[in-house]
Length: 604
Image (cartoon, rainbow, N blue to C red):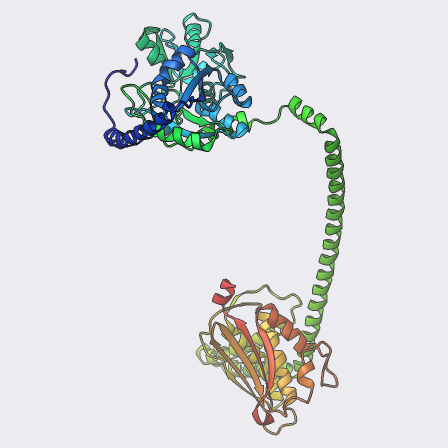
């Protein structure tokens, strides 16, 4: 059943480690020699008190660490080492009473000493022919070999299991594995804590007082080697791979036992002891000491189980704490109540003010949309006669072509001779339909959201919508709008509205000129789309440029003063800018606005 406890393959690192420690031993011997000179001068050796966790009794603990104590006595003759064995609670009480300088204990007990008493690890035990120090110990769950139905940890649900103590590291290591199988040992099983030494657990299972037992790893193998148990008597439950560990385990592996320094022990003594431990030359089946492990896996175990330093307050403990500090507790409770009331009040006020702000913003948005719609209708009113004339042209052509068709049909014309006339009627009908469509889209009250659009098509549609008005006023519109302009993210209707506003302003500016011209130019450069509308009028009046974009400011007798203000607002909402400048030699003005291209919008 068990792995042989005899000779095993040596780790290749063992020879290098032994060679390194040989030189350290020579150094320690030299230090010990110097120290022995002081002892020879009549100075009594100082007492160093070391506590040892005795999980199998005092005699077993003394035997397990005797080689370490003998070596320390030889390497540091200026000190007299006193060994005290006991259970974890006994050693904890001794540390609290300052009766110990160092402790050799299991990793779980060390974690509690570290948190509660500021203890620190000087070294971690290592088996040179075994696993690395970080995977040195675990726990074994075993049952009688005759209980063939017990194969996995899940099979132990609702059964009776024996363990040393609820605080024992082996029980806690096994508890984590049981929890992974959905079993709480304290709730889903009958757990008997038989106390120390752990040999009592084996006796309880053997006598049938428990169906299974939890014991520290390798204890069963040692009992078999000592003759205290038979090799075929027990079977390990839930066996896990244990790499170099020479015994069977049922749990994860954790770091080996640490040599622990108590908080009040002097750093100089701790340094001498750690140097001596690292230079120790272990014999067969003896422990060596290496740099201390970080014991993070042990912290994770205790955190998972919520025990030791990670245990929550019990109800009794919390009530006792509150009663002991009842006056401060009353102050804290009153402050918490005040803060709660204050927080509720502030939260209510914030929600109320936020709601008022949202309503104000919504009202302002609706007013803005209404003003924009009013400006749009005003533009359509100014262009209405020109648009009506533009629509009458295709309608008159359609009427002429239709009368011609009637005459041809009356003269007996065949279908082929009428096909060309019908095609012309269709072209003129589409032309009239396009004009009506542009008018309907332009007077829409609700604008569309900003979406990727083709600026070339939008600008050309705006110019086409303005062409009848321009032709009626004798204005020449010179458009330089190239094909393939990069896309922008915008509301197409609003972009057309801006262009029409600027063209209408330009028309009114050149109304008194004999040669009326307006240039609209679009170009993409430096990550943006630049659009300019330039006229050859008289230019801007003195002082007008500073107020030109103010709401309700106008130089026209019948103007609303909203067109340029709304145009600037729309441009800025698209991430652009609208500006005006007088041309050279005071020959008209140029309105210019730019919009970011799609790539720049994505980066922003």
